[in-house]
Length: 185
Image (cartoon, rainbow, N blue to C red; front, side, top):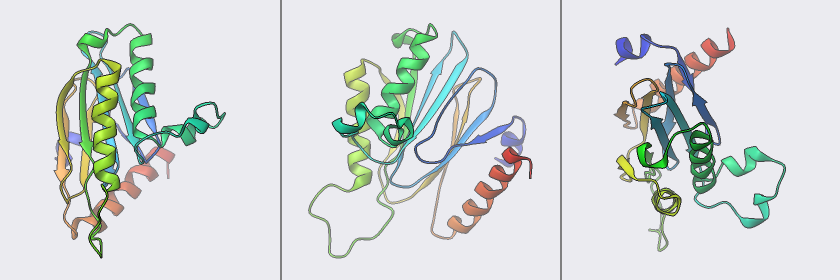
């Protein structure tokens, strides 16, 4: 996978971040219980990704001036990106949307009686797409393993790698390398 990713510039997204790009790049993120949505418009060659950490944006934040606070939420960040891509001329009917993440990566003791944050994030993403009238092209949601994804914005393809516990140190190093490259360090 390293050779494929080296073909294009890579932009790393953290939780509560969104990116919309018109040029070929890899949008990269690491997911545990968070959910990422990728949006691609074949006709406009526009790619976008959001990385939401919590399921639903509280009403009191909807009028807040702090946009970053709202982008932490899966529902808000998906709506925001759908709106932005459509405002550039992409019809909702052609959007290719893929969802990833929502894992239960931390063991709980005692066992949980309510839905986990990962499960809630998955449901929020699916319901938001339904509410927005946008179809789901593909997904890899839930489970117990984190994921690393690379979204290629010129083709709409997503490269996915599931993480094991031993992968976490490697992922931390890779994320730091990408942040350093972005900042010119």
